Length: 528
Image 1: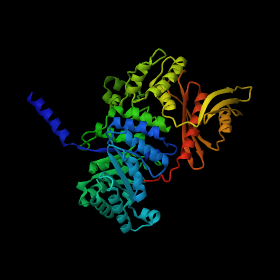
Image 2: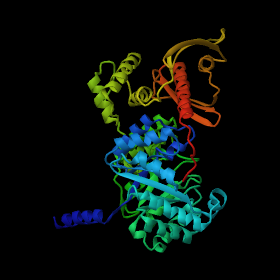
Image 3: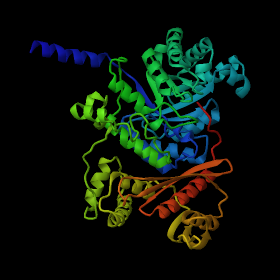
Image 4: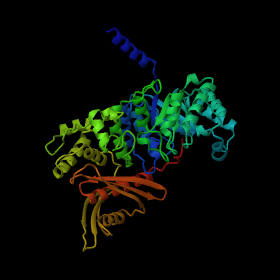
């Protein structure tokens, strides 16, 4: 009994000794900078709601000065979120900071996140500013932001390639000016873990007032080292990690939230830290991000990939059956994967559907539930069991979609080995129905040609991907397309038991997203 009591006291002591690493999620801002991954305000609000349930500490909702759409999205997220802090990004200018505050001021816990480059290459070629001018601008930006809030974060863009002493000088000055968080970004993914860890230690020991602020890191994955660099920084003393779900983001992406959190969770002796993340929510949020952005999670992706907990080799299977820890260092239930699922079918009622969608992380209004339930019943008539993947696809198409300019009314296709493929399509365009026909090399090509004629689109189809949501011959086909028009790139997604219909829905969804981008052009995207 005495030994057990001592053991319990040791655990309690260890927990009290652990410092918190704040999780700053920038999926809605930096993650959205993935080509074609733009989200509309409704999608951002729904994802932000799930991020709050996940337990992230700060949600970076967007860059209000970039576009009217981003301003509106940040405003709506700020009004919705009650527990997590909501951050808005701003360049170190008066106009950007004003715009950021106007959008984020509605939040229960608002944060202004301002940034300025500190590396010699950025100062010379991008900013055309001296070190003295950069230092002055950074301080002035923080002081100006402090008129609105005490919760200010300053980021030294391209910090990993900055002169360490100048970096410390900038951090010291902005902390004196009022910054509560200072961020050291590896903007171009250039850092190596050992070097980055040493840089964090250097900043911690050579910035006299660093104890008055939280040191944050924001790493990119250009060399595949974003997670490793972030963990090295945490080991060295950083206490905020800027991450995205599934690691999406500019170029090769950002540090993956799930990789950092599950490393700290699985290897508790790595560093004396803890996070507030509810790990059992990870998988559902990962799926939601994939569904909203149309960016598929690679099968071998750590933690959330389809193969992450799959075992094919006989030796592995035998070991897992005897003891899962032989080949599984994490239990799938830890991230929200479970083999136990409620079977949903044509006899399931609206209440059962609502309850099941709630357990999946969806919070639907009465109107949204009615819409999804109607489509659910139609799908249940076509296939015996409706899976979670099917329900996610329904919610995405019926609730999380862009405000539609184009909508499919019906599609009829003739095709075969002895006939020329032809398609007849009726679209609803701004509420008015139009009918058109088209031919092509196959049924999907014919349908796309008919849709293109009706909409007058000049976009090019850059990518076309088909996959099955589940196994079985009655599985829904899921189609993802990437469309490009001028400099705009949009992803479209559609799902249906009929693969031709799914293809048409994906194309139309992509065209709607292009229209959204056309109406909400971003002024800048390549930051941090």
